[in-house]
Length: 518
Image (cartoon, rainbow, N blue to C red; front, side, top):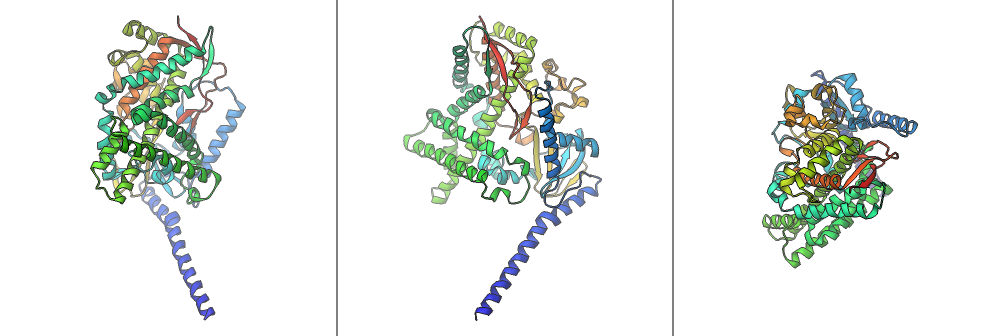
């Protein structure tokens, strides 16, 4: 009997092993090869992938070479080329052309830089070209299934709820919050500076400004708890960014590594803190902030059963995660880059200061009407977001078989467009594409380049960032406040080294020498 039972167990084990082996073979060998053949038949080639890993080892080798070069040149010149953090993509473009195929593990990625195909992608309204599902898997602890990662009816519902709360008329209602946060930053710098110049690393200040603004807008009177939540999000983002290099390798995120265990613990902590604020809000009554809007909208579209309560809570947690990345981190980094560019270009800093003095008539912080009149400042911000776009690459996934331009893209293939490369393409922007020249935007985007579809600092199409109005107002008000109160230059200790984490950030921070204006 024991022998019979043992034989049965062995047979069942072998059957299960065979099933999982076939499944793994299909997922990591057969299906990727099938997708590649469809594209290869259309003349689309690329670097040959290795089994399971794809081209990950080549990417790692390219990044290691960049790090070694940086060590040899500790103070590199300031060259505005954010696309350099993806040097492997540019190397492959030179080798295989503006349309090629590469792999991250089992993910097959169609890289597109042909202007006509880029336009076809940016103007595509089909739901069959959506956010990649792997983002929910790989970045789930940070993004969940919120507005940045969801598709179909889930995304449409979230956008319907959130987008109206970030239209310009609602942003006007946030001006007191933004003004208060900007004043806090300006006064803290004035307090630190006595006479002469002081070296300041601006990045943490930018994050405090952005965090304070979005915490007050999102959490209202509970903004101090919002700041605690966003601080934990920042740590979580660093942990997740550290495993981006292994994106696409099967199963790594499930291993009980120290990094993965810390990610899971932080995710639980953040969820618990958000739900605590939600429960307090439900007991205390309503406030007019983004959290309350999310809560009321989620409750109005669900019945009150235990499962629906869980769904409501998950909806709120996921979108608080998304608000952090879209409304806090990207705005803070954009502000740091803008300060760096103005510190590097004293003539433009003077022009902006003259414009501020002319428009504000001595008022320390401008109002909305004053911001509208600051055309020079607007050009500087547009140029900042051209050279250092918050999202350097935009990715989509063919959720069904779809034709883009003249290319048949099979279901499951990922489509990448590199914004940072398009923003500095000399065939689009001219020979001075890598130079800081805000005057190129004097006649708007259409006058700045020969392909307006190639400028997409806030994404494109139906998925364009819903918070772009808030981001622009924040940046304009903060820059006007800083330039109107201080003069500043780059510190000799500044090291220009754009680095890819979740977004392109100054690797060593932006260090400036600051003086108070009389």
